[in-house]
Image (cartoon, rainbow, N blue to C red):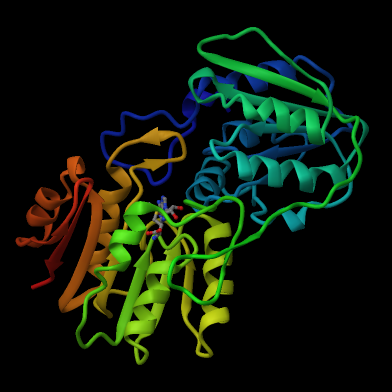
Length: 357
Ligand SMILES: C[S@@+](CC[C@H](N)C(=O)[O-])C[C@H]1O[C@@H](n2cnc3c(N)ncnc32)[C@H](O)[C@@H]1O
């Protein structure tokens, strides 16, 4: 399938964003000019299926941490490709590993550490990246865990980085245990997590403004390690907590952190926003939305989060949102809910409430 036919997930009306980039094209061009027969190939971090569909006639395994990517890969391959979403599911040895370089270098380090147990001296790593997203630390990590790197020429603002396996097997330093301000129990943070090393300043401000009230069911929408939902549960011990995130590692972290704090069961959803969540069941949704999906910046995720939150709230239910002041969430919420009230502001952030009528 030509990469130009790859569609993003979710499919949106009048979509202007592409489902592939020139790094996908460069990786495919390079690999398809070599003999791949009889080779075991691992594809890591494929965005929407350009790599997996382009190589589907070979012996490939695809790994992604993102639910949105998994759905893109599945629908573009007409359900033929079923990605794995946990690095512990890697098996045997791979001859070739092609990686769409992630933005998060801790995640990249975690991937490389896991890979060392699945590479042999002839194994080759090929990373593709758009030059504007190229982090120089990726070379240090490749040198440390894989072997000497070399780069290809840049083409259409993308570049390839090659490394042959010369090092030995190492364990991963992830997940890490991180202390968070006033929380007595440290948090377990897997590598592909928002603000995985310390408490984010927006999250800190949001934690100071968890609403009081009679809430029986609360959703932490885009939960990362679950800190917002955990704080809400500490303040509302009788409430049933729900957590959702696009990242499988976020859900894993939130599950472990919830179990380390509480004895009851919560509900965890690895999903896009809250797209398949039950309707009209929640009293409170707490949301610190992302302003990007992978490397693509935009308000499309926050817009869907607000719509999904509205559908999931009971009549009279509350959505509380934090965002950078310039993001204009207040107007968006007013348009969608017919109301929006500012709860708190500081130099950088605004917290607002929208009530479902
Ligand atoms: C700004 S972080 C907030 C994390 C956490 N709630 C906090 O306040 O510290 C946004 C979170 O949204 C998640 N996310 C990004 N795109 C998403 C999507 N399409 N559906 C669900 N979650 C998504 C990210 O993985 C990330 O954990």
